[in-house]
Image 1 (cartoon, rainbow, N blue to C red):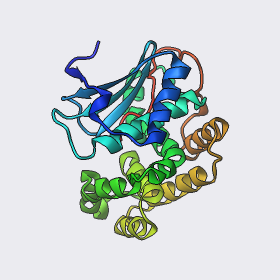
Image 2: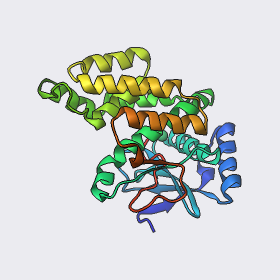
Image 3: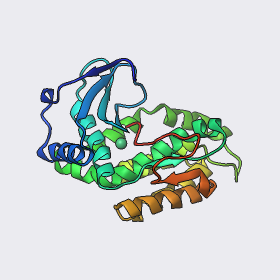
Image 4: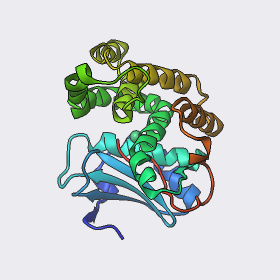
Length: 252
Ligand SMILES: [Zn+2]
């Protein structure tokens, strides 16, 4: 089992009515109680949604309550809710476990960004602004500083995009206001391949229907656009072959 986890009481938080319905839907569909927990060793994200056999949980990062906890809880419930609505899990399939490790963050980011398109508008209706939270994250994301520092030495035309940077640019396009997104992409103008790839992925995702089938198509279209072999992405299968990781929106 996991370590360093503390169970929290749902009563600690006053959640919007629609978010309570999301939680009820997840519990009804799974037959499981959704746990609310805090992981004081989690870093790099405000929280995670966990879905494993026999376990559903919203996990907050950090040792102490934070002002953004309600936003994080509703956000992670949003990911869990999509699963109950039939949005499939994605797996990486590759004989080399290191390849899976190297690409885990990439596919996890991509799944999250596509799913956010579906439930961020609902969060806005609840009076929570996930777009503002993304703008704030991106404003002090290390990767954007790195991007600015590295820009003059990067990459030759045709070189494969740096995926971490590409995902940050994609997040800017999908989750920031148009002016902020364009400012960020202007800063990244030297990074031709990353900017072009982020724009291509953004248009694929924006035009995808927000349904399980639309999600699957968007994932496969993005994967193809990124130049990966199609059989390395498994969507919606019960169990992936060895070795694999179950990806359900790790990260913010
Ligand atoms: Zn998310």
